[in-house]
Length: 320
Figure (cartoon, rainbow, N blue to C red):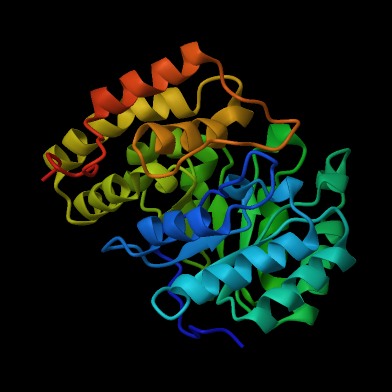
């Protein structure tokens, strides 16, 4: 049963990293510490595990269950846990969803199946069936992860509307459409439906612009490093304090440029290395096909952290 039955799909929701040992096994002690560092920051409304940031693509079902169970044991009584559902097949997705409910997660973040990349956008019934299978397996509320249309995994606008109607347990989308015009349309339309679906932006490379469009919150892997800056930015935007928002965004900018530079797939690898530079974790091991960053790139991350004023003592020492 979920620990929190009244989870709010708004505000700042970090997606945490997975700390690995040199042999690529899970370092549970440091992963738990990292989770607490992110989840218990004032202003955080929930925390996500088993997402992109925690290399879910490289984790077995048993490992995902272990990560969720340990996360719930560590912070589950203090903040709602959102569990990722990453699977190419709908039956496996439903199995992960049912496991998450049994363990005590409060909500699900459902990734698009990679199996739909070769034309699934032309078959809206495929997306609806995928989510129905998950909804039949659990009563947990769902966040639908929206990818860029160019990826082949994004759901067309009209498909999303059909999906929300067919699966009423969808309460929010994690919007990574990567199209400012479409993103604003999502915000203005979905949040004003008879049964509203909140938009949680994950456009962390242009976060301030996205938040000013009216997104109800953000769900971001960058929160694994700068969740306190994200909270400060979100609160400044919500209060209409443009100058403060701009000042905080000026600090986020160098890190956004560093985290999301090509190749994009290294973003969470870079975040791990940043946590090592900050002394928050001991090592930045990733599972193949991800690879260790070069010394030159780690030096660039160090410079970006310095430019942002993010130190071992905390990110917000000068933000207020």
